Amino acid sequence: MIPNAISPQPLAIAAQEPLRAYSDIALLVGASTAVKKEERQQLFEMLFAPTSVHWAPFVHRLDLERTLAGEVVDELDRHLSGELPGSVAVLQGAAATGKTVLLKRVALDLACKGHLVLWIRPYFYPDVSARIDQLFKALAKAARRGVCLVKMTPTHWGA
Image (cartoon, rainbow, N blue to C red; front, side, top):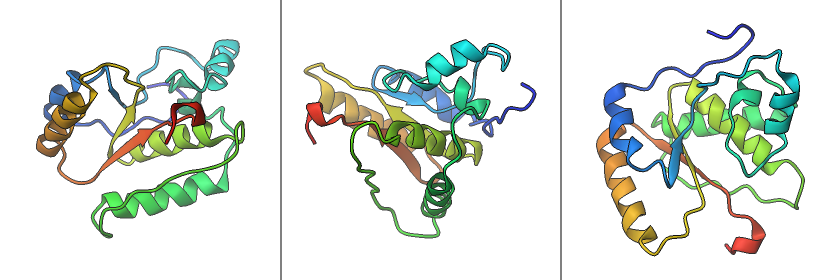
C-alpha cells in the first residue's frame, strides 16, 4: 500500500486473465505503480504526457481536482451498476483543455469503485475489427456488470 494514495478494488483474477490477451488494444485501468510520491519530477512528467498511460500521478492525486470529474464518475457509476440503461458518453472540447487528464481521473476513480474499466489504445493493424470483436466477446464472459471503455480520438485521427 502506498501512503496517501488511492487503490482500486481488486478485480477478480478470473476477470483479468481473459483480458490480458488484448493488452495490445486495451489496458485494464488500475493503480499498480512502483513510483513513490517522493519522485515528484517523474510523476509530473507522467502527468503531462497525455499519450502515455501512466496511472501513478493519478494514484498520488497530483492532477488538479475538477468538480466535473466527480459528477461524471457518479453518473457513470449509476449506469455501470445497472441502475440506468447502458449508454455512450462523449467528452468533447478544444485542444489542450484537459480532456485526457479528466478522463484518466474518471477511469481510475471508476476502477477504485470496483468497475471494469479499459483504456483503449490506438491500434493500427489490419485485423482491428477482428481483435475488437474478440475483445468484446472476452468482456461479455468476464464482466458481471457494465464495463467502461475509454477511447481517445485525437482530431487528426478522425472521428
